[in-house]
Image (tube, rainbow, N blue to C red; front, side, top):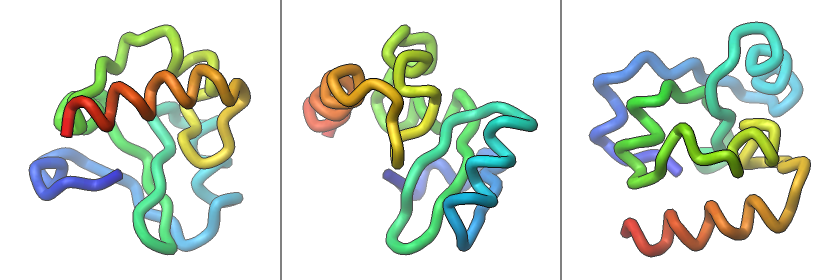
Length: 85
């Protein structure tokens, strides 16, 4: 869930999911996985992935790609990501 174009944005990186989840709750953003790490992306980073940060499915999944609250909403976002390339 990371593309090199996202490097221009301030992404907060974490080794543990729990730390990333706490940061998400405290500061907002979009929690995403990368290999064995986790990061919180800004809206611009989500756009670089070809996704709409205002898509209501983000709220449905709790802005958490790793452990989404709504699996069906996550599947819709995943399909959109696949189509975006």
